[in-house]
Image (cartoon, rainbow, N blue to C red; front, side, top):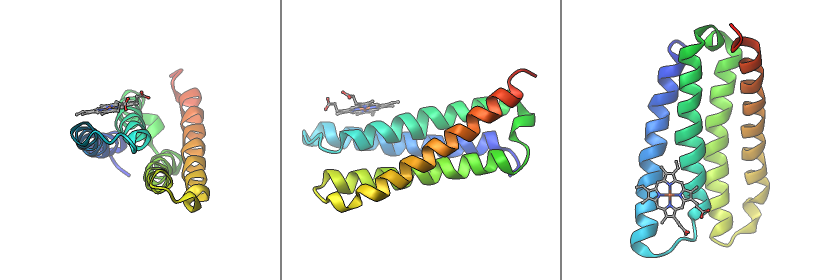
Length: 124
Ligand code: HEM
């Protein structure tokens, strides 16, 4: 994907807007039951994705090829699968537990790929 850094920021701002609106809804309703979902969307979707975007801009060689693309795609699938699953669990349906685990595994694999890219390129 060309301009991977730009794509990180394009999606990060969408997660930020969604997460903030969700936070505002929690504050206004007084129902903080979905607070972990709000926190993860903001910290993973906004903060982490924006940091990936900064890294891929600072070390453009790291953004070339299928590995960084896989890192980006796995992370986004992980955020969405984890957020939806945890939201269902918090609504009282424990059956979504395995899906939350799968989403979390995607996030960890993606972060492991990112760690590899950092150690491979951040010395350049
Ligand atoms: C319009 C913006 C935002 C609003 C209205 C908002 C609102 C809230 C509310 C009502 C809670 C629940 C607090 C509680 O129950 O103790 C919360 C928790 C949290 N928010 Fe936000 N939030 C916003 C933006 C953000 C952003 C940008 C981030 C991260 C980058 C963030 C990260 C968190 C975290 C980590 C928690 C959990 C805190 C804890 O464990 O006590 N929020 N937020």
